[in-house]
Each structure stands twice: as structure tokens, then as C-alpha cells.
Length: 177
Image (cartoon, rainbow, N blue to C red; front, side, top):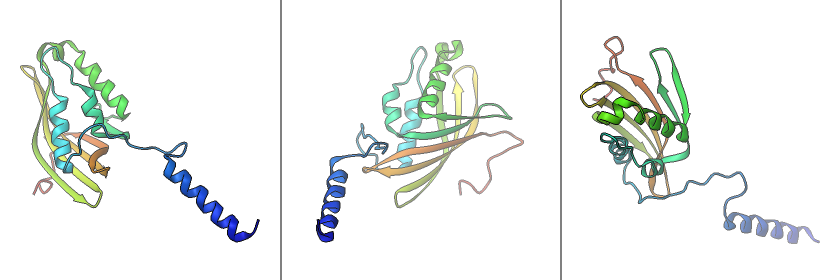
């Protein structure tokens, strides 16, 4: 077989493999919902979906659709500890929370107090100052930082980091300017 023919054949094989679908080990995001226009609207939708009334649990399928399957979530679990979770771990953590007697009785809500987003190309950063509360019981403020990427016309959360806002650790004054 001459070298020109081998070269053409190798390109044909590469082209047919790449057109036939993902190669083993390749991760492909599945799109199950309509495209979301902005990173900010993706995050606003997420906060709306997370809350639930007494005796209810959120529908996790639309929540899951806002994330990349391989997303990483880092949450403040105490003043001195962080929990690093997968998307499934994040949802399980919320399920455990919703199973507690106080949340079963009163429900749970998170309200966006301030939001700042920046988009550049197919990446975005969104800061959210929020208040999480169990109605009638109380709540606290926190600061979430979301990293998103755009795939297939929709913004997907790729990572979340979280911090609790305390008098000794206030939100930087210039963050939401």
C-alpha cells in the first residue's frame, strides 16, 4: 500500500469515528431542557427550583438539567469544614435536608438578595448573595459563586463554591457594584 493511500485511509477512519458519535470515555452533556438564554437566568431558575413547601420535595430532574453531569459543588458544612460533592451528592444532601422534621413541617426557601454575573464567550461567573430559611424557624445568609459553561446553546453549572456570611466575615463591599 503506498503512503498516499495509507494517509487518505487513516483520515477516512478518523473522520468516520468522529462523525459516528462519542469515543469510549468521552463525556457528552445531555440536554433535556430548552436552552437558557443567559448564565444569570440559569442561576435564577436554579434558586426557584430548590425551594419547596411543607411536606414537599423539589423535582430534581429540572435541577439536574441545569448542571454538567461532572459538576463539582463545594459547600460550607460548618465554620471550619467544607464538603466537596458531585451533582448526585449535592442532590442527596438536599434530599437528606428535606427529610428533617423542621423542613418537612415548614418547607424551605432561598431568596436571591443580590446577583452579579459576567459572561465571556462560552464561560460565565455568577456571584449570588442569598438568604436561606425555613419559614417560621429562621435562616442565614450565604454567598455562592457559580462557574458556568455554554454547551449546545444552554448555560450549565460546572462548579459551585459557597461561604456563609457572618458579621466577622461580611461580603466584600465592592463585590456587587
